[in-house]
Image (cartoon, rainbow, N blue to C red; front, side, top):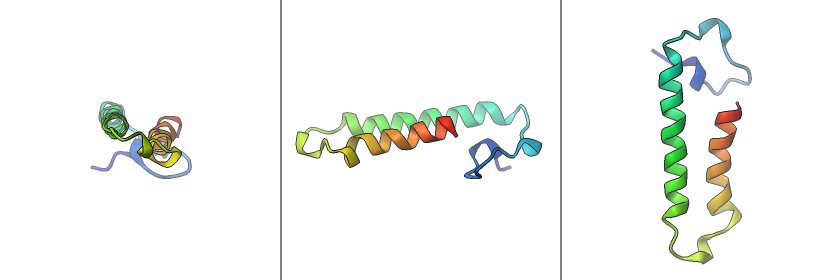
Length: 67
Protein backbone atom coordinates (compact mmCIF):
# COMPACT_ATOMS: atom_id res chain seq x y z
CA UNK A 1 0.00 0.00 0.00
CA UNK A 2 1.40 3.40 -1.01
CA UNK A 3 1.04 6.20 1.50
CA UNK A 4 -0.33 9.32 -0.25
CA UNK A 5 1.02 11.52 2.56
CA UNK A 6 4.53 10.60 1.43
CA UNK A 7 3.85 11.41 -2.21
CA UNK A 8 5.96 13.93 -4.12
CA UNK A 9 2.80 15.36 -5.67
CA UNK A 10 2.50 19.15 -5.64
CA UNK A 11 -0.75 18.93 -3.71
CA UNK A 12 -1.88 16.22 -1.26
CA UNK A 13 -4.05 13.52 -2.79
CA UNK A 14 -6.84 14.14 -0.31
CA UNK A 15 -9.19 11.58 -1.83
CA UNK A 16 -6.63 8.82 -1.16
CA UNK A 17 -5.65 9.72 2.42
CA UNK A 18 -6.94 7.40 5.14
CA UNK A 19 -6.48 7.77 8.90
CA UNK A 20 -4.15 4.77 8.97
CA UNK A 21 -1.71 6.64 6.68
CA UNK A 22 -0.93 9.28 9.34
CA UNK A 23 1.21 7.25 11.81
CA UNK A 24 3.35 5.79 9.03
CA UNK A 25 3.90 9.18 7.43
CA UNK A 26 4.87 10.79 10.72
CA UNK A 27 7.30 7.97 11.49
CA UNK A 28 8.88 8.20 8.02
CA UNK A 29 9.39 11.97 8.31
CA UNK A 30 10.90 11.62 11.79
CA UNK A 31 13.30 8.90 10.58
CA UNK A 32 14.41 11.11 7.67
CA UNK A 33 14.88 14.04 10.07
CA UNK A 34 16.96 11.97 12.45
CA UNK A 35 19.12 10.78 9.54
CA UNK A 36 19.70 14.35 8.36
CA UNK A 37 20.66 15.43 11.87
CA UNK A 38 23.01 12.47 12.21
CA UNK A 39 24.87 13.58 9.07
CA UNK A 40 25.38 17.06 10.52
CA UNK A 41 26.25 15.77 14.00
CA UNK A 42 28.82 13.35 12.57
CA UNK A 43 30.90 16.17 11.10
CA UNK A 44 34.23 16.29 12.87
CA UNK A 45 36.04 18.44 10.34
CA UNK A 46 34.62 21.95 10.35
CA UNK A 47 35.78 22.45 6.76
CA UNK A 48 32.82 20.22 5.87
CA UNK A 49 30.47 22.64 7.62
CA UNK A 50 29.31 24.30 4.43
CA UNK A 51 25.85 25.37 3.36
CA UNK A 52 25.55 22.28 1.18
CA UNK A 53 26.87 19.98 3.87
CA UNK A 54 24.81 21.21 6.79
CA UNK A 55 21.79 23.22 5.82
CA UNK A 56 20.77 21.37 2.67
CA UNK A 57 20.13 18.03 4.45
CA UNK A 58 18.11 19.85 7.09
CA UNK A 59 16.27 21.92 4.51
CA UNK A 60 15.15 18.78 2.67
CA UNK A 61 13.52 17.54 5.87
CA UNK A 62 11.90 20.93 6.43
CA UNK A 63 10.45 20.82 2.93
CA UNK A 64 8.87 17.44 3.68
CA UNK A 65 7.35 18.78 6.88
CA UNK A 66 5.94 21.84 5.12
CA UNK A 67 4.81 19.97 2.03
